[in-house]
Length: 352
Image 1 (tube, rainbow, N blue to C red):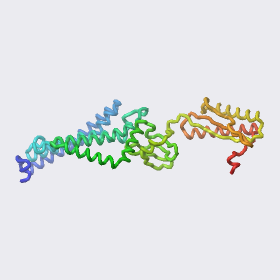
Image 2 (tube, one colour):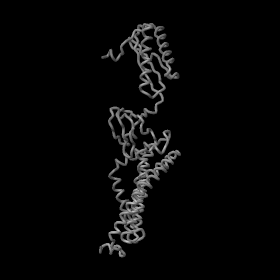
Image 3 (cartoon, one colour):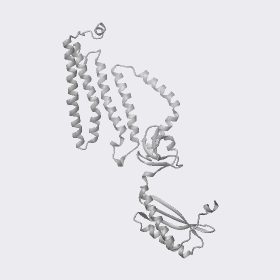
Image 4 (cartoon, rainbow, N blue to C red):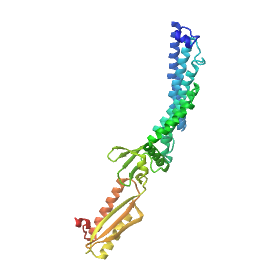
């Protein structure tokens, strides 16, 4: 009690009735927060979302926890003020502490909003406008909000920030030298974001085929890729920046290429007729591209011709591509039989 009198000179020793009333105030405040404020916020969120204002609805929904904490803090401070008969909201010894709590909850609401969109960054954009730079900004925004909250609360207590900022600057320079490799990955991630070669969900492959899979996440230092065997690989961003990347998800056409080896003793007219029939069969297929179909002899060996068969399919679906390729191969086999073409083994097989 003596220490409280030193801290709050006008402190009054509470009676049991005062304690009971303070508890009732806290209980009533909790009931109001739980069954009134929370329900009102949920109804407002639903109303706004029904009007297709999803951003405003998400912001209010994420702020609801901070609002609840701030309200209960105010209720507790009010009950304590009644209990000891000291206005804690305005008393010079406690007002900064109470105000700091309110500032903290305000920044926490903003932090919760950024955290929500960090987990679901493309809630902010349409599917056509997706940008991998957005997660970077959201993560950086979370850090900046924490720093700004710390400085704001420190200013309420008249804390001298000049020496603190100087120390941070010197420490930052020292740390920068120690984490050069990490910074290279971070700037590599920024380069990936600015160039926008891929997005979350894209299927990519590097030129050397060492990395191939689906993009699961892109953060400041690395990119998370799910490989074909369902494994997860964290690839440093600097690695991706320094290599050609194939974005297989953005293909609009799939190339099919096949080599056919025909014995040299086949008659030239028969070969030309067979190749023309193959070209026609590919052209007539409903899912092949008509602009570019190649069915020609492209190499001559001592005992055979090599026939290049190349065409494109207007799809990025591997299953559809394989089905069309299968149809064409069956058709080519039938043409070879109809024209009585004698096939030959490839020169590579003969060398073996």
